[in-house]
Amino acid sequence: MPTSAKTVSTLLGLLYEASASPAQWPGFLSAVSATAGSSASYFVLVDAHGRCNFHLNHGFDPEWTNAYTAHYHQHDLVLERYVAAKERHGEWIGTRQSVIAEAEYFRSCIYNEFIRPQGQLHLCAAALGGLDGELNGGLGMLRNEDDKPFSRETVALMAMLAPHLKRALNTHRTLSEARSQNAELRHSVEALDLAVMSLDGCGRVVRMSAAAEALLGVRRGIAVEGGFLRGSVATEQARLAELIAGAVATGQGQGESVAVRRSTDSATQAGSGPLWTPAHGGAMVISRWPPSRPLRVVVTPFHSSEVLLGDRPAALVFFSDPDARPASRASILRALYGLTPTECRLAGLLVEGLALGTAAEQLKMAADTARFHLKTIFRKTGARRQSDLMRLVLGLPGGLAA
Image 1 (cartoon, one colour):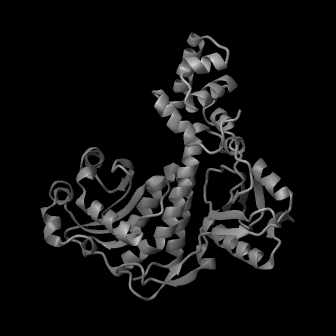
Image 2 (cartoon, one colour; image 1 turned 45 degrees about the horizontal axis):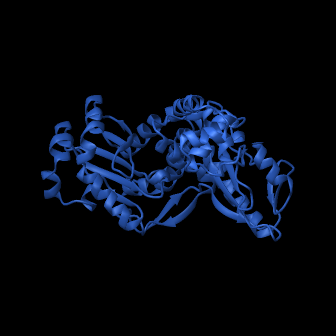
Image 3 (cartoon, rainbow, N blue to C red; image 1 turned 180 degrees about the horizontal axis):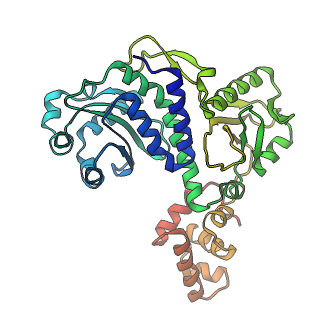
């Protein structure tokens, strides 16, 4: 039986709440598992080197979870096959039989040493592409060997969840990186000069960063009028309103009110009929008078009981101005790691290739003082050597000017 629109909307509300509050991920996974009728479920992120970046599960014994993280993820043949299918097709959603033959599976280490001892057999999973940070993501459901295999309805459910899960994970990763450096997300946004605003359940602007306020204040192509975000061009305004309506409704857990229907032909085993799919925001460009280049706008749902950007926002809008001068790396280093101006200048000189002694001379300080500052920089940034520091600084946007 297909999953109802109300159930799907509830799942999406939990998902986007988890994107803002990590403590909510287990609740989302538990709800998906119950909806799919699985005895156990998991979510795993693996980096480009095959290392397990994040692992969450429901229904597994903790000892088995630890064993998978420490050892079995390196021998997970099924995961490898899902990832390979994802590489060929962009993403892959289907039952285990869609990626590996039964005979090969029953001979595998992951089945005989991990799955079978737990009494499990049936698997339905989604291998996700398009994740930030060169990550591979997998969402999987398992049933015991005495249970019925997964049906096309479960595949269809996962196909519907996949684009939302990718967007939520990318949002979660962005917010988590900021949260790990600064408990106050608003302070981090302002310090990093990020142009972002939050919208309430009516689409009204709740709060905006200083960068967003400055960008919209010039009223070139887009502005805030009467508390709402408005585009100057009629066709662009219609598209913007559509993105905001979908994101706000989904962020409030009411995605069925703006549901659209799409074909499932691209989702393996999901069938060929129409599939109920809530909107989840999106991206567009806003025209501006020359010589200004078009402004890039991204709208995404936001659902959280932990208010990070104002009073219960339902959507976030991110702006990217291709003509804006990026913030200096020095200001970002100060914001993220609390480096002093002197420490920022020293880091900049080292990244430019100067030896520590030469950098000390340019800064008119003793070599011992430079070494002291370098040790302080290492302690604040977590770098262990100068090569680590160079990779960290060069990975930041902007220039080295203080």
